[in-house]
Length: 415
Length: 149
Ligand SMILES: Cc1ncc(COP(=O)(O)O)c(C=O)c1O
Image (cartoon, rainbow over all chains, first blue to last red; front, side, top):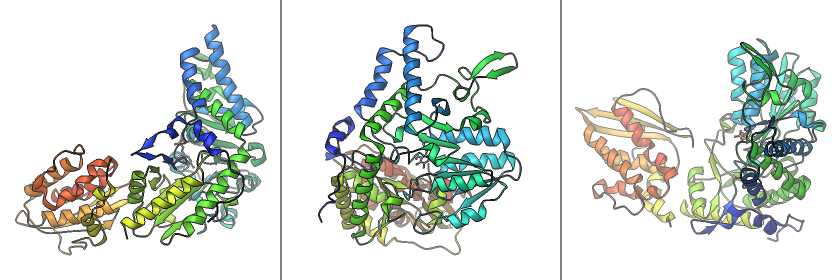
């Protein structure tokens, strides 16, 4: 079949920026299809972090000397870049954390557990959340007596919006939802979800771990109250994450970590906290990580997030089409690529996902297998596990072809 | 370079597609449940002990080809053995699947040796040993679920 004629990114040029993509695995070309777990890093990001350590390593804030000024400038510069990347009004709405997981925990702890949530208040999630958007809310239930409710998904992987409306009441205080599912690829109508949440006086917390790397995000247009994502899934280093929050809500949220950096003054027995966002950044932050994330944002912005999204839609369309032609292969999630991202979970009749991943591994193809940290969703679909391929800017149609050839090999083994 | 055929030999594929002793034992003297949360694999091992000897052994559950084949081969291998013989077999089996690739395979393992290729794939060792850990728990009559993380 002819490959789609639509313009894709210049993948060979992009690939050349990623040192790891030059290596082989088990003597085969590396075909990396696990960016939903973590993305690879371009040399620009790798160089930026090593540059920090080799040229201007110093702790941020309060240093009187030149090095400290440089590191602070770069660290705060990264905050500006992240703010612009998601259309925040100000860099002061950007908190650096270590990950999406930490960001959601900051909200669940500081706004839920230590904040306004009271016994009987309802927190509304969905069955398609990643564990990191489930478990922190369990804490609020366990310690505050909050009631947790969940919106189910349709068989095509979309949310049951009419059920959402039914579950949303004036007892609902928090709605928490993923912008993009890490198993189904579903892109949820978060703008609409937030709007309806606001109508009953609830806030909307958005897990953008799978969205921020792959599509343009505008927190103002979404009207998200909090939004979380991870640097390592968007070409940045591990150990750096982002929590966006509306200023008044960040004010109303208590810090998770007490210590240096997050205080204005400390006395024996009490302290005054620093301003937002610094009150959430107790201790020496991941300076190199933040700087690396800033450069990852530059890299993505240079390509253009619309182009990233367009490219991934093409690759995903091609993959879904190719997989649909394979007998005995099932894919999950919406078929329409305008409603989904480049995360493709699949199963093969007669082959366990673990065996699929092992056989593909021998072909140099990295896919994930298992429950993808979404056990409630797997239970909903009555699946013990799936294999999952996910695409990014450095994947092209050849990678999809390699996957298809690998799947045929799996089917040969288990024929 | 690890060979796929080594990991997915005909014997392994055969045992995974048509597992032996894949049934419950109604009058079992012990059972245990093993769970590998990483991949969702779950196995229940049934035992009928007769004077310290494994008179009958079986399993049910779901899992990958490696874990199913390993469970199936295990039930064949330990039937008629004493507790301590079964334990010794597990020790040698475990040594084989965690050996360095190329190490000589313990010939006393008989048919179990078809799983020696697993040592080329360290992430699959848990798949190959889940049924064995579960058997151990049943032999020791531990009630809790064995969980391999
Ligand atoms: C949808 C979603 N949310 C949250 C996370 C957690 O991200 P992290 O492990 O970086 O905290 C992930 C990562 O797998 C994810 O896919």
